[in-house]
Image (cartoon, rainbow, N blue to C red; front, top):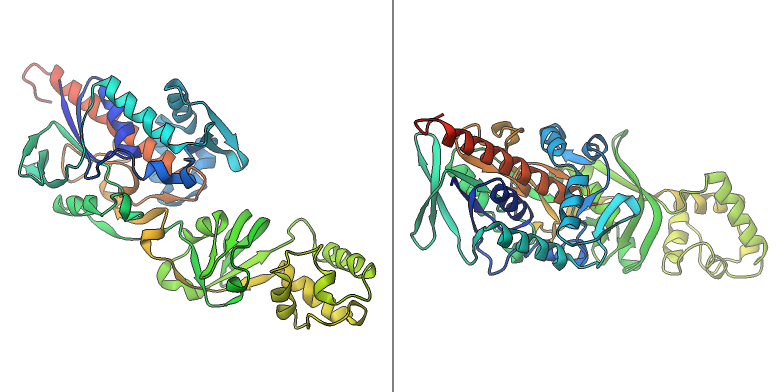
Length: 422
């Protein structure tokens, strides 16, 4: 039986292990952590956004880097296939706003447990607390791994699915990058993606803890719009966070943050003219009140002082004293609240890692190295990342499946040859 070694017991590694074993391979998985799926168990704030319920072409629109590389993998393992897998393993799923798929239980641990049990039933051997130190290479072929304790394991194929560098406390230490470089692969410098942003302005601090729903965040670079979506975000003590901000961050270059302008439309459902009419109606009913008190039906209380300051209006000014120009300035501030990113938060706070093994050196159909035969890659280790919303986990599952299928097919074909050679 062909033997496959997998470094990494996360989403990509476990999914690949299950399918490789079901396709007739002997599979052994190693992970430096003391438990399987550590990072997977905390994704989606512990709920686990398993995938995004869309078709392949729609999916690729939400991939920030190297989407074409995923065309084949997503064709063979689409979101519908991932959903069918988990429901077949006894995990009922549900689809929420934005096509985001979660377990009905809202428990990420159910996803981890389903993968673990599927591995056990398929006969996969798992060694936790076991770190892969080096790849064993011979004649441009990977023939096994050397473990940290000095044990050498022989294999017919090796899959690296060790993850990136986000959430290092879950075991993402960058080991896969080192192993890939040992094999002669180019590793694009890891950087944070899906990451909160620090802002040059202090206004977010004054609204710390305020969560916004149904607002539009637009990011421009010069005259070019690089991101614009409706959704949710959050003001924090350092700047801004939340789903919209995380997705926007993966379109921004960390070393050129000063080039970007972030604009929040607090009332995207209203045109500027409709908003002005709304303000006029609110003010007409409260002519003798201080402006700050008259705006409580329009904006959250912590936002009112900030918006008035942006519009150049005193909080204590009476409603009946507001000029048309001041009213228009207030509307402009509400529909065009601008911020400048000063920094991305540390990579340890990133949901995924941008960068990794260059996809130019990996076969997109099989996930096999173009440099070293028998060496495969899957998941976050590759230089592919996407928006928040289940896309990155789907990439892990799809690339894991592609690698497993290719390994099983190649090894079985090799075994069928009379002399054991291809």
